[in-house]
Length: 67
Image (cartoon, rainbow, N blue to C red):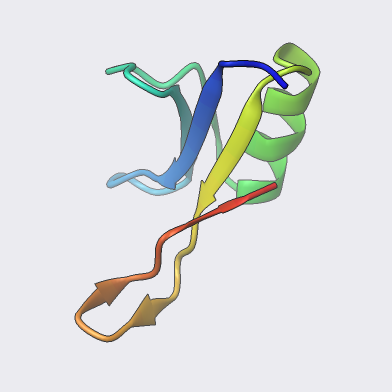
């Protein structure tokens, strides 16, 4: 398993973006979550990908899930 962790989150201006664990800028952006996941898997095949859940539970959004 790779030490690289990539997090996919919704963007404030619409669509989704993927960032490295401590990154400030998105390395991949796309209008759909599925498109970002596919692109990340192609570019970083050994990385561990975490996706932010977009549903709300209790006082805020749910946590991340592994892909």
